[in-house]
Image 1 (cartoon, helix red, strand yellow):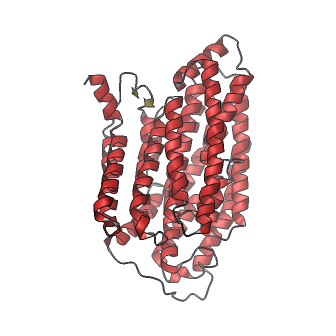
Image 2 (tube, one colour):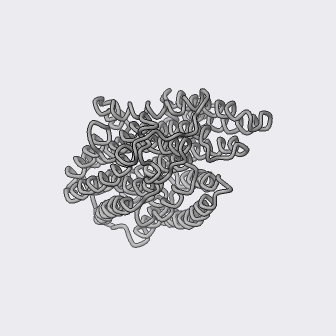
Image 3 (cartoon, rainbow, N blue to C red):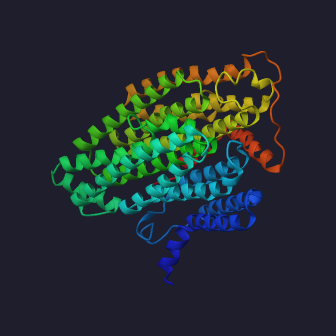
Length: 499
């Protein structure tokens, strides 16, 4: 085997460990059955842990910085792969203790989650249109099945059907966009596409209508996965109907994958070292307007929600708008501000990641123990579960963007990048939206602590080592949400994750 091929395999070692974990869990299920779900879960978590260890080795791939000529091996991919792998592991851990899932199907649930993580991990490293499409489909098909995992729940089946229909249409539109890109540039490689587009611009050949149409079609597919307005229709119903661990997976892993590949596509195709041109500037302003509309729509609609998972679903749409601010800065600014926009997006993704996994984990705990799903059900529960409810408030404060949580630093970083990129109006809109978010997030906190008769409500106790570990992870996330406010580790990591 040639050294180049060995380097390529070393670069995708994390994904190979995920494939091994999928095979191991499927085979183990044949022998241990549903009684051995903790053993199957341990195999999956071991595979995810090994994938993270291999990722930390820092393999560089071939001489051109790619694996097999289709997967980029760079700091940007490593950043998002780390978030995706860690999120996949936490979803598996929480899925083992989620009581809304049938024990007979819990073992099959685990390899499906691993498949979603595998697709997402490949997606953020894809440097080729074919690889990008295959990775997106692997991620999507697994997600469709997971959304309808609660077969006896009608809302779960409805969520899966809606997700499937919208997702199929979005994938078809994106695939058509890819075909136009290939037809116009003659290449499937993102860097080569950007190079040829740059040559056209340097030759005073402005991108024509075909390239504009191709860009729009590709963005439709990516914006759908990121739940950006107006391609967000699936998100609230799917978030509410899917099992809570699956909702966490969609809100964190799927969104991280979507923004990871979106940033790569924008950087490789449109920011390939050429001077700014009319299409690029127009695209930046369109993305900025979409960011403002998305965060405003998500926040205002979340105010009206009573179901906590649905509320967090609209909140996730709003945060997609915040993340899109970084993409807008990349497109409208110069090289320095473009880097600032990308780094602020990465840092905000990490802060959103911590708070969102924690918030959904706390919602799962309260649903498991008390059967509480609506804000009315949350009244006075803090007096029965003070520690988990306290952690929930920490996560809500971080999602709002208030100190002393890392969410405050994340929003501040995004506002600074927008201001430096000449999008002062977008920074003002984001600040006003934070005020709206404060209202509905603290509506949940108010229900937990300040409403009800303030008496202890009996609930179903949790016993065993695995539930203890699962709920301990919530306090670890809450601690990280506060600790990273006073540490520059995440900022340094984001700045040291170049494309």
